[in-house]
Length: 100
Image (tube, rainbow, N blue to C red; front, side, top):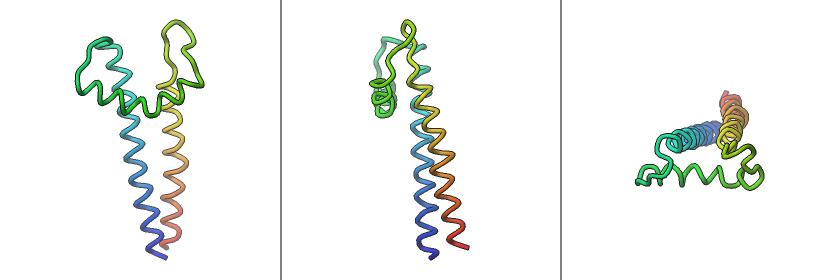
């Protein structure tokens, strides 16, 4: 049983790293859109492309509401926080309980 427990714990740890990476990219992309709105460099292109993996599906359902305010980064951040607190925490606790 400890093999399944270790698998669940490792899966939860990797999933948490991926979620934190996406959260970081979304925050940096939103900040860079204010700092350098029309400039292009490799770092900004990379951060925007990673953030758009999550943001584009949300933008299809929730359009820009008031002026040019884009709420999709905030909604994506809330979804990622929910996944971290619910899914990752559930996998970790399940792995620890199976391993006991």
